Length: 296
Image (cartoon, rainbow, N blue to C red; front, side, top):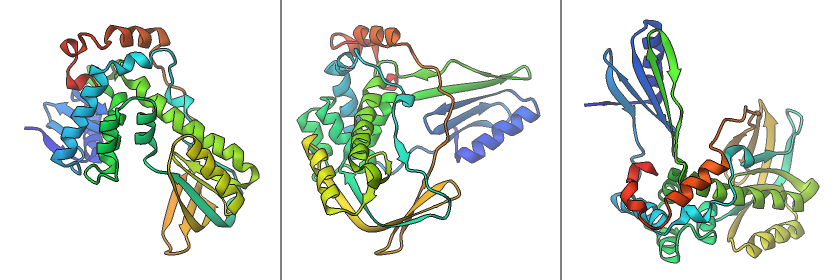
């Protein structure tokens, strides 16, 4: 029986095995790790245990809906990749800069709402997953969407060498997830342009701007025009230091650090031609005969 360990413990074991030249296989599935070796046996990092049985059943139904309704084929004309999506944008300031009187404008259930607006999920699933219904948590909504872009990296240490296998990707469904992320990121960038000099940062689905009633109204109207609901939080300040922009809620002293990411090398992905061929192959007809739940 495989042991349940932390990611850190598994990576430490893998490093030790490579140092003593013992063979092993290390697998990374999104943010989780699995280790297989004769020396240590098998172990894996813990799956998210916050999901309830109701949420697990809901996640399966979302996956089944995406496949049965031929949703991947509807996303086979335009393809996006992680580097096409600007999840975060921070206006640069010198270290030590403190900016007061900031307001956060946040889109409610941004990814879940976008999945509905892009017809990835139907109205019944959307309402059931909405926080207004109260049975599905935020992570319960994100897991079935994020799983559409599941990625598995396999590293094998054999014969004194560490070899990385070709990543196993969710060719059929990953573009659906990236399309959802791209829509939200583009909307945040549009809000940023609207704020102009009064913009400070945005992070995924929340934008931080100068507390100006006129500007807040404009950004709220923008989000409303795209059929989103928003909430705001006032009396915030931003302090820049150590490569971070730390937002402090002056009402209660809570601080939230936003790490400014560095540019990374663009990874290799499937070509548009490969993805389009896969989406057409696994269209609405006969797809369940060829795929199982692990494929997505």
